[in-house]
Image 1: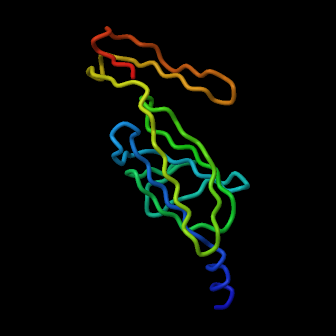
Image 2: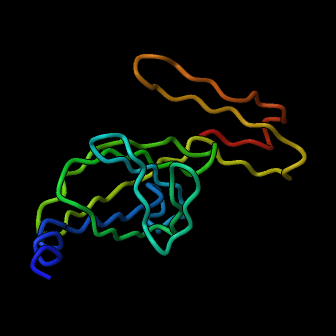
Image 3: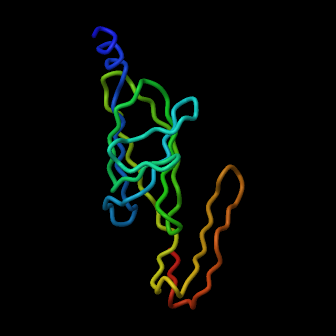
Length: 140
């Protein structure tokens, strides 16, 4: 019993709030959260697949004390965000992230392929090619 109480006191809370940077509304997203050894963390009862969990814009986890890294994604229209957070015993660390929309697609799904770039580790990453008229895709 004493060991359980000790182990529980060596935990803290990590709370994520993810919003669209333009609307400031909560947005669904994928969160890749890893501990210091690189092990993916679950946020039960949220859906988890391989190395990430999915939330509707808010997630709260009870985790062992330590340092964690995260990457947050919301599909190819948004720039991913990454960062780190420290969990302290019996404390709540709040992480607020605003996702920036790179491309706003105003076309039917079968009418477009989109353009997405971002800077990652000094390497420009390009995904997709625009295959729609200028009235169908709004960059901004």
